[in-house]
Amino acid sequence: MTHHPLPQPDDIPIREKEDAMGAYLMMFAAVAVGLPLPVINLIAAVIYYFVNRKKSRFVHFHSLQALLSQIPTTLINWGLVVWALWIVFTDLTLTPEFWSYAILAAVATVFYFVVSMIAAYKARQGKMYYFLLFGKLAYDIAYRIRDTPQSSEPVNKPPF
Amino acid sequence: MRTRIWRDLLILLAFAAAIFFLGYWLVKKVDWQLADRFELGLTIEQEKKLGDLMKDALWDNFDTIDDPTIDSAVSVITQRLLSALDSPKYQYNFVVLKRDEINAFTIPGGNIYIFAGLIEESESPEEVAAVLAHEIGHAEKRHVVQKLIKEFSLGALVAILSGGDPSVLMDVLQQVIGTSFDREQEEEADDFALTLLEQAQINPKNLAVFFDRLNKKGLSYDKNLELIMTHPHNDKRMAKSRGYLTKKDFVEKKIELDWSKVKGALE
Amino acid sequence: MTFNIQYAERQSRLELLLRSFFGFLYILIPHGFLLFFFGLWGAILSFISWFIILFTGRYPQSFFEFQVGLARWQTRLNARVFNLTDGYPAFGMTHADPAVQVDIPYPPSLSRGLLLAKLFFGWLFVLIPHGFVLFFLAIGVMIASFIGWWMILFTGSLPRGFHNFIVGYMRWSQRVNNYMGNLTDEYPPFSLD
Image (tube, rainbow over all chains, first blue to last red; front, top):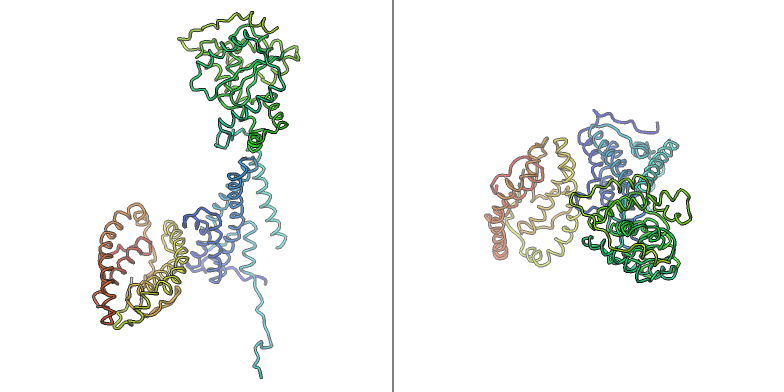
């Protein structure tokens, strides 16, 4: 057996369900703080992950999935901000490439938002919900059975 | 499981690429007239400066006609038009070029050039006024700048303003004279011209009359008319001009010029 | 809510002076620095919890416990700032200070209607009435604090009445914050106790 068994919704205490839901809501951290910078969402997601991963595998899975999916979204939005600043301060050419990238960023953000809200809802119900790519990665990391190292020889020995 | 992760990654990337190219197609195909929508275009001052640079290039490449009869005739026609224009964006300059082409074109900054062939081909000053009204329309609606920003980037135009590199300037000039405006711009200039002509008490039908005649002559695809073909005046647009209904109190006032004498001065 | 700061029968004059002259450096800066970041996280959690209450009718328990820990920490710090008790305030969310006791009971469910009412009218039916009174109480607290400082210097302890008054003010403010922060649905009473 390579992975721990998955808990079913009834087995999961409500506390864990709420914690799992909270992970997907970290994308609003930037709004909460008041600075519209994409990187704040990422930092909040990272902090949430490290605070919550020890709690249970279910919470670990959802926090990790939220974090992993937040990374490319933040990168795309950050790229847009940088490109826009570049245009404002040097080039002044609004090329079609810029607009199509902006459209991509907008679509990606909306898609991420919708999918995260669905995931938050499912997590609150105690269900597993797998994103494309990130779901599999998060499941593997959160539920993989890791060998505990068995050492027969004691590491610490007295000096004499 | 490894392979499934890679497959998922490829699917995500494929989606991203699809959206990007869809967006690209959307942006390129639809003319959003970005230069107008966002205030990152050239200012009127910058446009005038660009026009001045191009005027110098034009002086070098074309001969102008400096005949007093023609000059005063053009002046009479343009005065009639300009007095009917409320708050023009530019101080308009009209120059007659010694060429047989039946054409007129606008360069940035409100400089309008008339080929002698246009005057030759017309049968009344009202017809010339109609064509000039159309060119003024292109200028007032800043079509020339729009066209230039679409072909050359804004950065390149600003570079010309600071450097004035002659070879690039010739490219730009060629672009301005040689290529046509798009259909939307032509219709906008037409509408502007029809209104302006009415306000100037010139019969707006003159626009259609003139191009109708040219169209008929175009069947022989004369070399002279080649340039005029870049200003496609299709039937729909001529019908619009012919069918234009002037207001009830419209009183046509003929332009007082001895037109045969003016045309004679071209020899 | 339990909000108690144990009355200090005797206070060290040395600590008082040390705190008054150098407290900014060795108490406020370290605690302030950390509380800034924890407070920011608390603000994020509070913002998100508003929406969670709107949709589920519950304040998520671990978020709630975070806010309580934060309140406890701040009260611990304030107890030293107002010279109510001696000793260096401990860091962290989970430390239990014997002198400072702050406990907010976890509400199993919260009213969504009240949540919206607080958003749109909170300024009217909470902040104005309580704010008005608390403003004058704050002036009283400043006076009491000032006089109290001298009393501790000369007599070695803060008069019980002053202590109760200042703690009462802190308790009242905490209750208003709890109500507006959606930690409870109980309207804060106009009382120092």
